[in-house]
Image 1 (tube, rainbow, N blue to C red):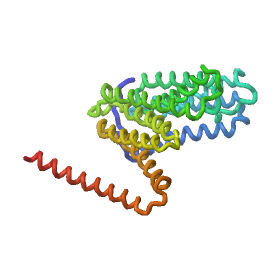
Image 2 (spheres, rainbow, N blue to C red):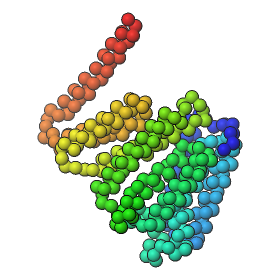
Image 3 (cartoon, helix red, strand yellow):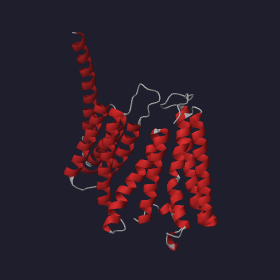
Image 4 (tube, rainbow, N blue to C red):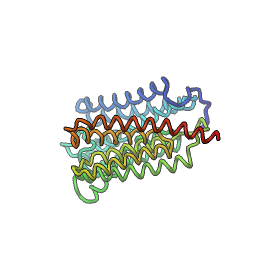
Length: 307
């Protein structure tokens, strides 16, 4: 990609970034809603033509904006185009008659049954995302890549085993494994690719961490075991995520770890100690002690550094 002079606001949480990402989500949602609602009236060919036009506009305008220095705005439009690839692939398969008659027009049923055609959709989407990443190197392009890989990791084993779908517990473990691998990839990118001092350096590691944690934490949380030991292990894992936030200096780990820890505390409050009058006060006291201990530790470390 040619190096264009960047004329946007610096990256981070600001009005420009919020407007960009909100606009991209609106475009994806609008296309999915329109084609899902009008599929039967458009027919397979009409839906395919509409999706291709939508894809061409998003891709063309995105590249045009990138060349003029609007890096984030253009990158998001290219991402919108990539997100349309599974829809275009499905429509082509439908037009060619590969989907059974009773399955046609059911794009919103994308994740209900394992089918070889779904694997093709996921592979094509991954290829499109990788091709786009090679061209523009925009971090959010890892979103369609990560989601397609996640679905593929669940669909492929079921397809190999000749089953329509895996059960809930199997999918949960696959999500945990996929999330752990994605987090590991994020760590490698964090140490090799990401350079915070360079304004043109994309933070691919953040998106790997985010989608990896969504899969890992979501799969772990969905394993709703009734055993108290398993729930305590769940707490320990989430405390480990909080520790990783300190080690990696990534607040996203703190967010997911805190959600898991509070989920466990909620379990204690409403199940284990449901009738205990003192439990809320004990929790409050522990929180107060943690805050005061942190304050004392900071002042103590300052005195040591001055000595």
